[in-house]
Amino acid sequence: MKKNIVKVFGTGTTSQQFITSTIHKYLNNAMLNYDIDIIDDINTFLELKLESIPAVQLNNESIVTLGKNNELKDKLRKFLSDILSRENFGSLKKVVVPVDFSETSTNAFMFAHRFATQIDAVTSVLHVHSSIKEKVEIEKRFDQFISQVDFDWKSDLLKASLIEKNYKIGHVNNELLNLITTSKPELVIMGSTGHSIQNNLFGSVSLSVIKKSPSNVLLIPKDAKYKKIKKIVFAFNNPNNLKKHLELTNHYANLFNAKMTYLYVRQDDAYDKDLIDFNPSENTDFLTLHNRNFSSALETFVEENPVEMLMVRDKQNHIFDSVNNQNNIKKLSLYTEVPLFIIK
Image 1 (cartoon, rainbow, N blue to C red):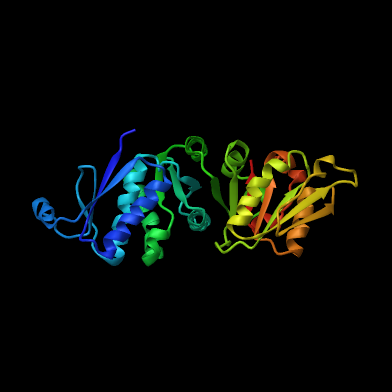
Image 2 (image 1 turned 30 degrees about the vertical axis):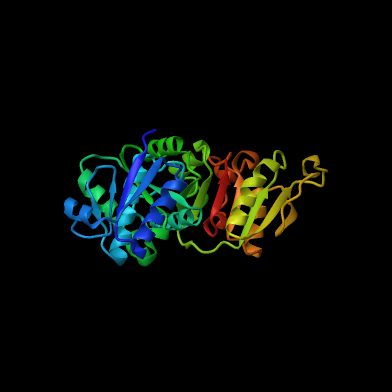
């Protein structure tokens, strides 16, 4: 693998030190092969006809002057994004979020970006348009949509998750699943409108992603704003292979310093051998509910208890199997009130 050379031009100021440490942090976290050269010779500045310092350069490409304060952070962020995007962001984790500029998807995007920032991941944003006729106009709108994030973060810009833009012409289902398959994200985050299941959560796009995505999916209600998650509930009605998901549930509980509740919805009082050695970590509860209807049990529990993220297993719980059977679909408010994390 070719080693990149990043040059940082300056005179040893705190700004130059900040730039150097920031570049090192991002490229090191992405596990990219690179060297950083510190150029502080004034004669070199004159020879290169530098307009101002600090400045940066990748290999022998054009030198980028950074300016000061917020301008410096904005230009440095773009410089880093350019380097990382060439290497598909290296080993940095990704969070994929589709947007269509609706209020629901905009809210999901803002949630996803905060979430990605929390877990040191790249926010991979996808917009799919069905026709090439308005390509230029739509791409411009997409750029403006993304640039709003930079404005919102202002002085904390370099703390925010980097954004990867994906603009495609085609069918949203296919393009979204293609992106998920190729980028292997930590998580796929999608918006939900707050209507009934059959008209929202199980719309064609959401249902297709839930069924086919190899990555975990987080569904965000249209009015849910990102906040510190203090209470996570992992609900299940089948204890088979439960242990293999504990690493994931504990990971998110530790990440947010949240209390984790394991909620077992069982149909009878039968003895479950799979729970013999089940031993959750500290700061956890283990509760049991007796109810033959898994969704109904969750609805009641969420109504009566504070829950900020609900986690369920797709394959083990089978809660999405009868989606096309209208007689079995209820308007469950819980799926439109709390973020729903679907473990694949």
